[in-house]
Amino acid sequence: MFNDKSVLPTKKQALSGRDEAMRVPSSHHLHRGHSLQAPFPEGYITAVFGLGCFWGAERKFWQLDGVYSTAVGYAAGFTPNPTYEEVCSGKTGHNEVVLVVYDPAVISYADLLKIFWESHNPTQGMQQGNDTGTQYRSGIYYATDDEAKLAQQTRDAFQRQLEATSYGAITTEILAAPKFYYAEHYHQQYLAKNPGGYCGLGGTGVTLD
Image 1 (cartoon, rainbow, N blue to C red):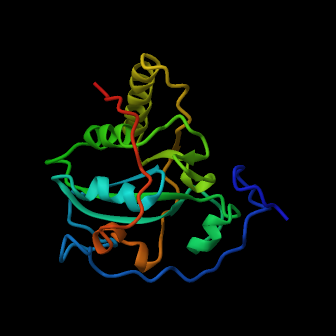
Image 2: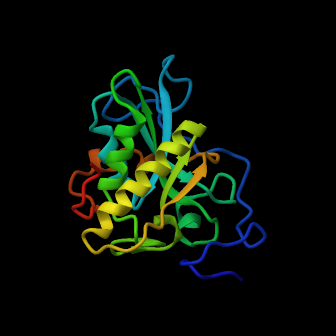
């Protein structure tokens, strides 16, 4: 049985999962009346990022002007509709991610990428701070070619900034957006419901100029 939480499983090794989707609240805990699931307002765009524990990652984005809604979930793995325990086992291949729904007339994808790069350490591979395992890897999951290009350009620019302060190579995966699976209801906006809750998310102190 595959049991190495620091190595991504193959599709054959991954847990089988289930057909039933996770049931989540209809609206955001903080942004009252704003839907947690599609359909979203016309013209709004979604983005998906992985930058360590999704509790802290979600908080980074829900605070931004122009962000309509956020949700935490799992992506870039093999197991359909995984549970939190399954993801933590390292046997699904999924990453802990945050779904960001935003108004591009107010905030841009480039703005979101700046928050992404500056809010965690993208050089740590299969961990973030004291959190270790494949579900804590750094990831950008783009929806368009323009987003992919911008993700790569900002990665290269941030790499130069990191090297100037003695950090190593960026390990962030940049992939076409995979299916997003919502996490359990109690994970949604967790740090808004539990202000004193754990958050191991921390940046490098390096800025993306």
